[in-house]
Image 1 (spheres, one colour):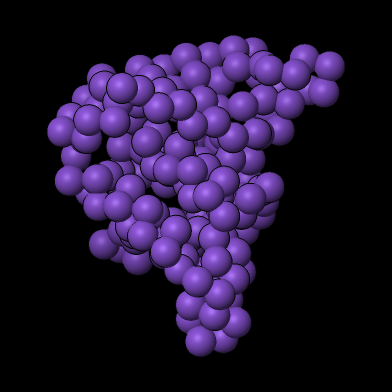
Image 2 (image 1 turned 180 degrees about the vertical axis):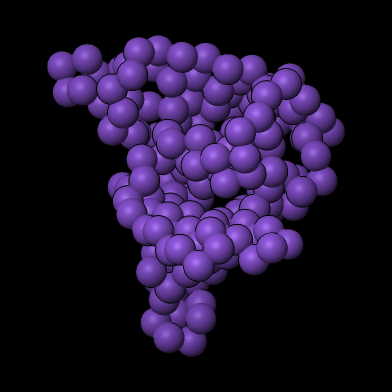
Amino acid sequence: MAALLEFETSTTSSQASQRFASQNIWATTSLVRPNQDSKFLRILHSNDSSHIGHDLRANLEKLDSLKNLEANWNGNNAEPFSEFLIDKAKSVLLTLKEQPEVFPTARKSIQFEYEMENGDYLEIEIFEDFAKFFQVVGDTEFSDELDVSKIFSKVSEFYGEGFYQR
């Protein structure tokens, strides 16, 4: 049995498809509302998780556990997470070779974190309708909004050119 997860992005590139051979996952970006210039990233994957890596499986399970958080889950009136946001974060995780540390935030977002041994740091915060990144490379800090469809590229850039080449 297969599942289809999709989420809206604001990119305007033409249709693209990529198969992640090591995980037997297909990711497709396709135009679904041509008159509104919006796109959806669709991730088609098998419900059989035996073909995915341990880190990805752990992250997907962590995201599933966020569905159980109730209002005030952090003791500071944080709201529960929507299924839409959780599915959106799952869709992004499925495209990433290097799995992040995953954290819920009190800002109604899900945060992905990467840290290199040299202290370089990348944080991606996914909200229902946008994403943001914060990055430290050496002594330089960068932050900005980030189109969800560009997260794969941002992580690849963080790890260096060629990291995702097969």
